Image (cartoon, rainbow, N blue to C red; front, side, top):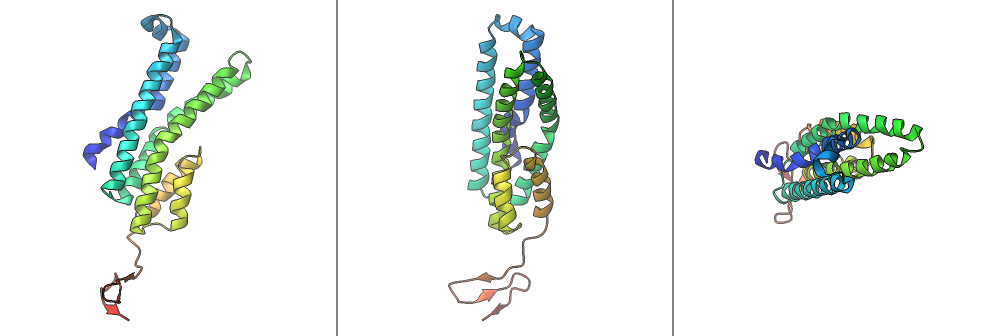
Length: 195
């Protein structure tokens, strides 16, 4: 799994690239570089998002296909969401500043749209962790469902990613398994069959 972590890098950097583009747009140095056409900035950002989305989807499908450990996926999901907290705080503060004036209010909508794109990228990791932990029975189904859904909801995703990562560290539950071949129930604790 470690060699595939590079696929998550564009998604992790996406909010910071957006903030860099926004800073360059207001300072003017990016407009000088691309020839005074602000639509090219959005084109570059759109390309970055599309590459990030494809890379995150590839990692998501690899995680499900190769059945990587849910515990590891939960940790990766938590780390990704924690890494992006400074970007979220910066975007929130910029939104508050832009909302004060009527001339910059349109940027609040752009920032909200950007936040939705960013949470979409990191939400796939939370969903992969939920599916992995549910399959391993590391975490209750209710918490897996909540994490899978709330991984795409602002603020709740970070809190739940931390809780989910902590809960997924516990050993696989000691529920008995039922084998249809021999009709016995096998206990994971002692591996002793009983009827």
